[in-house]
Length: 155
Image (cartoon, rainbow, N blue to C red; front, side, top):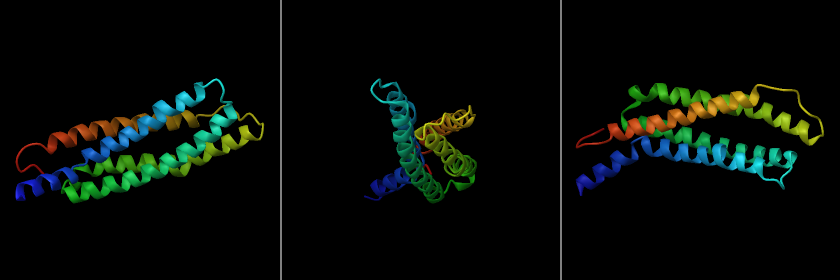
């Protein structure tokens, strides 16, 4: 019984589970649902932008929860010293997207909805670059965390 409880504790405190769950959530929205939405012939650009704003706001809230869970799991794992850099970069990306990029992209959506074509901008490129970086970090950290969590007495 003690062995089973130790294995459960190791699994719960391994950052891999949250890395992979967060990765999947982000891939589903950013790389699958959003491009599909904009390629649907019956959906106008203003409608696609408005729906995307709502979806990305919800994704952002879910990512803030995922970040908090990641930080808790890393702390509880006893691996905080090894994982602080990963956690810090993920936090910076999520904060940049939350506090800087999403509000500005939302303003651009408001312009389109008001019938105004916004000027060219780097904002989508910046958001996409951070999104891809975040996905790479989540996938890599999940794989590394799985490797660290293997074997008897792994911590």
